[in-house]
Structure formats: C-alpha cells, structure tokens
Amino acid sequence: MLYSGWQESFLYLDGRGETMKVAETFEVMQTRFRPSAAAGLSITFQWNISGREAGVWAFKINNQTCELLPGGVENPNLTLMMSDADWLSMNEGQLDYLNAIATGRLQMAGDTMLAMRLPDLFPTFFH
Image (cartoon, rainbow, N blue to C red; front, side):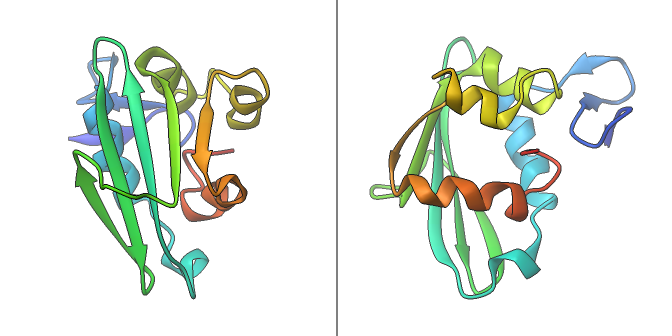
C-alpha cells in the first residue's frame, strides 16, 4: 500500500519507513495529477533519471487526463534530467524544486517555460 508520510510529498512504502523506488514515485505522481490545472493543455513532460535507478518516464497530458509512459516518448515538449538521488530527495521534501533548478541539479531541455506548470499539475510533488 502506498501512502504519504508527515507531508504529502514524503513518500513511503507499506509503513516500513522505506523510501519508494524511482519507478514507484512516478506511479504515485500520476494518481496526484490535478486535471483542473490541465485545461486546454496537450503536452508531454519527460524525466530522464540517471544513477542506480536510471530510467525514462513521461506524462502525456491531454484533455485533462494524464497518461504515464514508462520508457518515454520521442519528442517531449519538456525533458527534465536529474539523478535518482536528487529525484528521491525532491520527492521526500529534502530538495526544493526551484532550488534544484537554480543549482543545476535539475536540468531541462525543450520548452522550459512549461516547468512552471508542474507545481499546479502535480502539487504534492513540486512545491
């Protein structure tokens, strides 16, 4: 069972105090999507995660729906790149989203202005 800890973005598995795996964070992230923030959007965000839990995950947002695409897509509107350790730290509330951008721990390619939409689309993950 997935649930949140003391703050919504501090994620654990089964109450064992174990931090979620990178792939699991994307599954939970999809369930926290806020359709009302996606009115009129037809975009794809992609995360390229490096490190031990490296992988590629994309979210296709269209008609206020959010589809998780493990493995990514060919031409996302915005690609976000970071290490698995930084991604998990951000999801645990230890690394601030804007701080990660400012310090280069989160890098982007494509339409970088779309990055400002993430906190509205996934409010428990980007604050």
